[in-house]
Length: 387
Image (cartoon, rainbow, N blue to C red; front, side, top):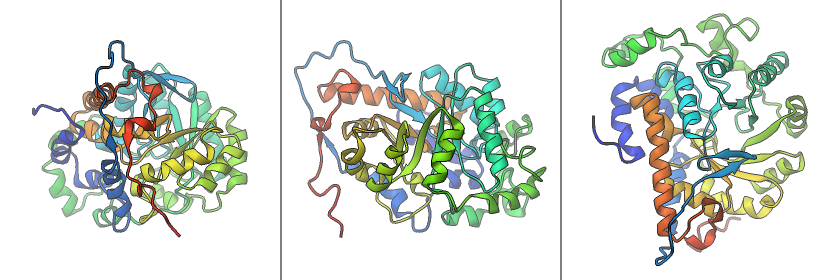
């Protein structure tokens, strides 16, 4: 086993171990993938200010996100099909997050159900909601999250209509994989993954199969999901869902200052500056590039988080220094999970914390909560002038 010192070190192992359709599902964006690429490359445009002769004893990466204590301001983002990256993937990722002391967010489109994750963890996790046309199903899903003790609901706003992801279409992405000559040939080289999947009963979308009307198997699931994302989701419906949930609400998918103002107006506890990892509107600005304008617009009214593009502790530091109070990793933990299971998620978190701590120290800071823009060197044209 190679020595793992960066998030990128997981990827060759992950690619060898996991079927191509699930690797491509994680490692791709929509259309030309411009936004997917710029989510990471735009972080590289920001430089760091080195400071010296500062007492670095007693450093801390501890902080809070929506009032919850965290070992570092990094949450595991909701990632669909996590249980196809590794058998019982959501359970393993949630356990790693709990042990580490950071939030885990379970996707509506998870393989392990809300109840599965709740029964295998001891601390509350967050639940991410996709709004479906079937209002009875949505109401049931919200109640199930309440019954499981979820401490926050993350409502995703940017997937009313699915962005076209060419690799998923060409690979015939399904969960579990349909057995075609192409997939059989690929699975034949992924025997360790296959043996683990044979050892679990969790191979379908656990929050949907057996819970949504008429969805009892893979074929009925496929037709249901193709029709169910609610294109009528608007701010009035968001407000109703907030009332229905009654707990802490995080609105994910904000990429415009005007939408951020609307989110603050309805009383969201936090917003996530996010372009869905470059998987929805290709050609949109990267999350890190749009972050400063959103902080300026609503930073004093709502807690601001960021996802899309974070692959290191330095990326986390840059987001925090630009005004975010929390960050999310999706692909970074997925690489670790696919490569090494729960241990891989734990290792990914430790890599990010170590990078965050070391970079913070070399920038002359001891407390992650005290990071500000003065630790950065940001190009004058970073946010761009658009007309």
